[in-house]
Image (cartoon, rainbow, N blue to C red):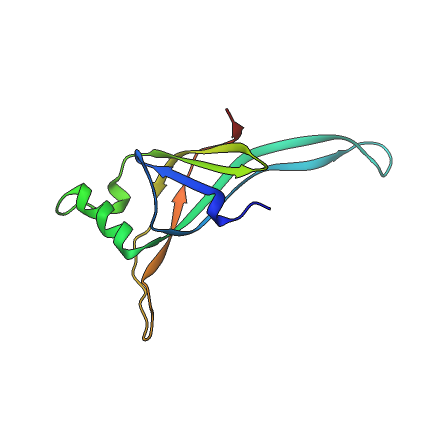
Amino acid sequence: MAGWNSVTLTMMGRDVEGITELSYNDSEEKENAYGAGKMPIGRGSGNYAAECSITLFLEEVTALQQSLGPGQRLTDIAPFDIAVSYEYQSIIYKDRIRNCEFTNNSREIKQNDKTVSMKFDLIVSHIDWNII
């Protein structure tokens, strides 16, 4: 069984250790095309869309912000790729999330938190699945 310990995420030239969650997916609009009768006679497709979000510890976010310099925001970072690799049955699978950009920056901390982490939504162009 593959687990969190088999996943490696590389972003902006380094493996990210301060990550607690990663979510990515893509979809394509599809619909049946109808002609004579009640059954579809074909299928049409529309736009492609990809989504990604990551949850990072405060320490990881602070390191990112320090690398930007004073007055810069996470949303100012130029588009970057995220490489995700995971091992399953001694085979390494790789996905690449393309042209990522941060769309938000926030902090949410509450009483009795043992760690501080935040979720970031990313805008992405597309995902390359199972690349070599």
